[in-house]
Image (cartoon, rainbow, N blue to C red; front, side):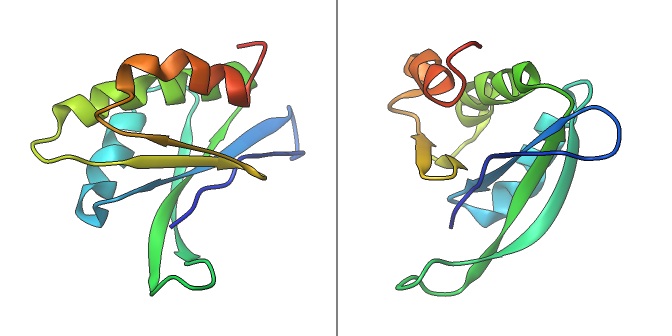
Length: 121
């Protein structure tokens, strides 16, 4: 499972894209619905091949936003989603070679994760 964050030019204003993966694939739909509440966020569920040495493939959420600041909002909402689950889940966010895993154990330390991806956020 993996996620990728990259800035990609598109028609119109610059759009930032990230991919999020979740440890329990059954929770992907709930995560998608949770993120749809954020204004300006476009979400697409896409298949994502596992890395070499991993078994199978999984779907990830590809998220497109009009500004980096909205990505910070997306990341900051993930602890609320994790707290709302009955069972423990892990959400992974990646940007190129940067990777962050958000779990029930580190949800109170979300700002260092946001700053690692976006120092100006």
